[in-house]
Length: 325
Ligand SMILES: Cc1cc2nc3c(=O)[nH]c(=O)nc-3n(C[C@H](O)[C@H](O)[C@H](O)COP(=O)(O)OP(=O)(O)OC[C@H]3O[C@@H](n4cnc5c(N)ncnc54)[C@H](O)[C@@H]3O)c2cc1C
Figure: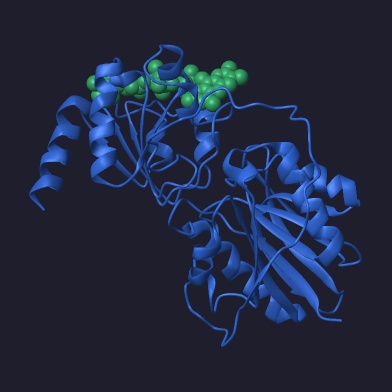
């Protein structure tokens, strides 16, 4: 029987999110090596219309709609993944670490006794040994682990965002769209949402550009400049622990060992010294631009481009320059 690779789609109200196309690209490359089908699980309260964006990119789209998915509850998601896996027996399930439901996947792997790889950076087939080889970021990205597993049972793979190139190339002539028919048992929620974050246009984990600030921004007022720059670059704002501890922005913006681990295309570090704890969060960043008035600041060792100067002079100049373009 043909093997099957499943990808869990990530979406917003009207769009499939780019990270889904990264996962599908990775799944497609592996599927060609092991002769597998690529299947996408699209789930949410009302997602059927989004399936058209997946045509040609995979063999099957399975849609699961339920009003209960309006809010994230671990208990609901876990039921769906377990029932889907029991019915379709995926060989490999690929998800992004920024997906809602990431807390389900280690448990799902434990439930099925599956192989589990978190922080996956790539997957490739080694035909001689019949192994799937992978690289995995560990210790906050400070080390890369090489590993391999045999497809003797299910594998659950959680990838980091921006590690694979997204592909919109519609390589398949046909994509079958079906409804995933599983019934959810009534559940007593163990978790309850007590607040929600509204109007967050681009999340830190997904943003291709992150403008981050540290103690050098000198206050919440200084961070307003960062929001202005981030908005113009369609990016997100990040912060050091020092800025968060000072109350200039919330902890969800913190980047680093005890904050988010991110992999944007461009990271602009403003008034950030570049401590190892902070740098642990940007191991995956492609290009780092640092603005700091101290030419000996450690951030310049990590930076691809450095500007020695005062953030309160340079950032407004950048904003004016962008506006004039
Ligand atoms: C267990 C542990 C976990 C930690 N986890 C994290 C974490 O997840 N994330 C994190 O960020 N930190 C973390 N830290 C804290 C970390 O060690 C540093 O203290 C912190 O990152 C420093 O933040 P900073 O760069 O904003 O401040 P500072 O180190 O004080 O640097 C401020 C920089 O701003 C520059 N500057 C000042 N004024 C200007 C100006 N006007 N224009 C330009 N440049 C200016 C200065 O030259 C300086 O380089 C952790 C620490 C510990 C012990």
